[in-house]
Length: 95
Image (cartoon, rainbow, N blue to C red; front, side, top):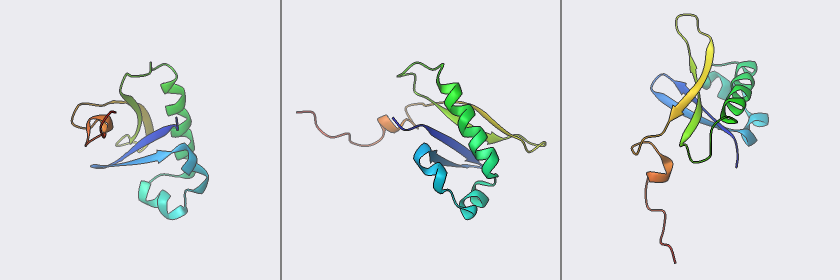
């Protein structure tokens, strides 16, 4: 399973996958409104945080910018039936 980090930017959420980290461009970092150092630090904090979470808990790491200090923090985000990817759409038929 690939590790992910959700980055909250205002009302938008961008998902960053571990396999994408080496190829993040300067333009993408500007859209995320964060430095490469912050992105890597937040990702590492998210991976460490998720070690304590049991599989099936429907939790994910979320990075968000604290205001007014502007420092990036990582916390746990919990899925609800409205935003859970496993609850969205048709998963196909079981045969």
